[in-house]
Image 1: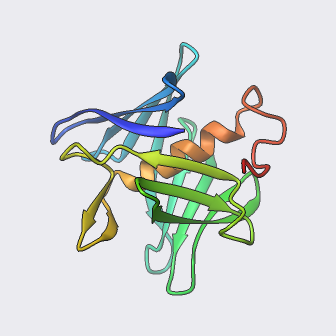
Image 2: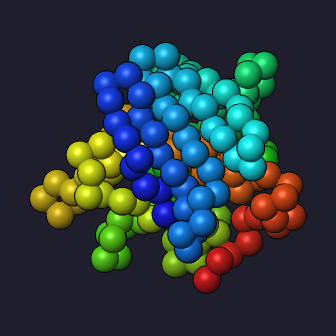
Amino acid sequence: MNWQTVSSTPKQEIYELKDNGKKLLTLEFHPATNSARIEHARERRVFMIRREGFRKNKVVLCNEYGIRIAWLSHDSKSDTIELNNEIFHYTTRHNPMPELLIYRDDVNNPSVVCGFDVHSEAAPVKLSNGRLVPRASYSSLLLALGWYVLLPEVSKNSLEPVL
């Protein structure tokens, strides 16, 4: 899978998740309102992305009814994502293109691997001194990917190792 930047303006960023050239979903992220519109299989959904927690260290994805779907947490020990009441870890690597890895226990055995298109100025991650640096839209892409792999039609065991 691979995230590609379609267009970007200060008011809206549009990304497509593709797998072998086939478009899986489209994400429209609106930074001013922290809302995301996801289109998948001719169905459009609206999600809100907000910060919660004592130090606002959790990024939460809520559906149009305010129900939590997933959340991200970043602390000094690890980066975690909760999907379907299960805790996973996530990280990025440069191999040779930037990739997002979602894994349970071992980073060498990821459940989901998703690449990034970094050729655009609006890419969700950028290279700085050989290091990957996430942009504001990175959280929305990570949460949208988590929502996608939880869809029943994608896979009954969506977070089984892909390697």
